Amino acid sequence: MNIHRARLGYGIVVAAALLVAGCSSGDGATGRGGNTSPPPQPPEPPPVDTTTAEGAYAGTLTQRGFRLSLIVLENDAAWGLYENNGLLVGFFEGPGASNNGSYTVVDGRDHDFVDRTARRSRLSATYFAGVSIDGHLIPDIGVQSAFSATAAAMTGYDYARPASPAEVEGRWQGFHRNDVRSASVEITRAGVLSAVMPTGCAWSGTVAPRASGRNVFDVRIDFGPAPCELPDGVAAGVAIVVDTARGQQLLLAATDVTRSFATTFAGLR
Image 1 (cartoon, rainbow, N blue to C red):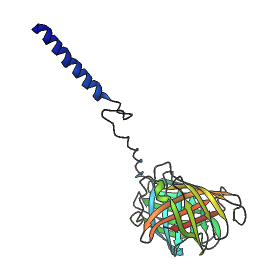
Image 2 (cartoon, helix red, strand yellow; image 1 turned 90 degrees about the vertical axis):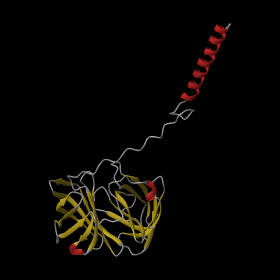
Image 3 (cartoon, rainbow, N blue to C red; image 1 turned 60 degrees about the vertical axis):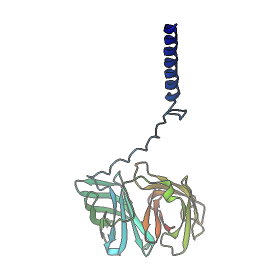
Image 4 (cartoon, rainbow, N blue to C red; image 1 turned 30 degrees about the vertical axis):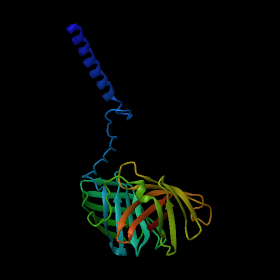
């Protein structure tokens, strides 16, 4: 009789242990009971290349006296945005090449809204990777412009981290090209852009974080019919958001496929 009771007690203990084990196993991946696993972390952006000119630099376009914000992308393309009294009055852009401290853009364009020209230009510079870049913007016709810029002077902006849709979302009040009449641009969290310029030209388009993981937005602008300067045309380019003493600033630059037409917008919120 004692043997049967012992066996019965042992069976109850084993069954209880199995029951407890079954209750604690759960499906962690789906959150159905048991221990849950933390959600996967987003991948880290790739490190900035420390041998090329890639990065963000600020300085001066010397001969014109304009503030320069120069972005050299991961593919070596250059976007040099220059401002005068709060207006984004022009930019130069083009495919570049880094080579052991030398940086060149052979087929560049300098879109100057003050002179209302789009000059074919070359860029020749020397750089210390991620620290500084100095050189000359050399037009096929006209006077060359020296420039000097450093990464330390590009304050309120971190090129290396991924762009966030939340940073560009909202209404931006500012100026189109060198037009002193105010304009506003609206961007949704989904990256849908809409605007009406002082000329009456309607913009639509998209603003999306760059796939490289850099803090740069790829921009597409679809222009409406006349009075747009590029009726029913399309322009593509880049935008960045910079923290300033006056608030966040959106800087946007884009060209059409021929690179003979260009537009900009600089706005605050």
